[in-house]
Amino acid sequence: MMKNQIKNFFSNNFVYKGKEKLSKLTILSLIILNILVLFILDKGIDFQTRVLNNPMTKFPYDCRDIFTYNLNVDDFNNYIYNAQNYNSKYQNIKDLELDSRCSLIFEKISLIKNNIDIKSLKKKNDELSNKSYELNNQISYLKENYNTLLFEKISNQEVDKSIVEGNLTAQNIKEKYENLLLELEEITKLKDDLSNKFKEENLVNDLSSYINSNKTSVLNDIKKVEKYYSIKYEFVILLFLIPLVLIFFYLMKNYLKKDKYVLYIIYKNILVVTMIPTLISIFSLINIFIPKIFLEKLLMFFYNLEVPFIVYYFAIAIAILLFIFIIIRIQKRFKEENEKLKNNKISIYDSYNKNICNICGNKVDYIFMNYCPCCKNQLKIECKVCNKQTISVLDFCMNCGNNIKE
Image (cartoon, rainbow, N blue to C red):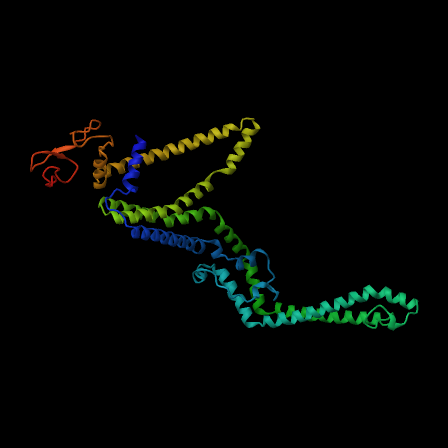
């Protein structure tokens, strides 16, 4: 009985029963419409989850990294002072969703970049680093060849026959070594001066102070917005899709009752398309809410008792109880909907064409039977014009053609 009611509900709502046929061009248009609707839904979900309800929009990486990884903002070589010319998708709207503290951080960084010639500082620092690298190589070379020069001195080898380059001798190597060390020390001092000059800037100190004073609150707020985000993500999608599903289902049923076949087909297709991401999101939520950790602990408990299969008994029992509740609710709803659709013209015409009772769905003969033998539904009535028996559920007499409903 329940199977028949479910079948009837599906047949009455999702099966095209109109006599009007769809042209190939109409079918092609429906396919294009389905693709277009699916594309728009995808864009809507993307916008809803990546922009309006996303922790990464409120606290983007550029902001959270400053608080999370203790970046040295007083170092002009820090990547936060690099030129950033990129604009991501929905950037203008994302800027409006940005946390005020992150926004202020970016403003302070922008002030530093606009008021301090960081590019010049980096260029000077690179030049000094290159010189430092060259000096270190020369110092290493002297260290590596010092013993060689001593052996050459002991053997009274001539300078022009030395295997050591740079006109080095045992007498001048120490002097050159000390001069290189002094030069390296001077370059190191210049690099430190560049670094200290940047660190002592008021704008840099202001940025560093602001980060230190807000670090704890920002990190706590990041944890809050990320808590249960996977669940919030699916709920946001469902809040976006469920109203559309209900609207399209209502419109589909409305045009079905009004016998407007083309509009019915259009909204049925749109409903099916909308149900695809809706069902995916529902299954994702179910997967999230499955108490996996609890089941693992329960399984381990019964495993220690050497009866782990009891866990699966519990799982089966819970699943059965859950689906009993769901099926009873669905069955009740289906029954109510079927009662409403009994007098629908499409259902009546379909019942007549298939020789089945439109009340109980059992086989009848509308030509030779006056009543359904299963539910006592009256199949024929007397026409008021010609006084002959005609089909009760149809609008016109099968003998004289007059309207029997008037």
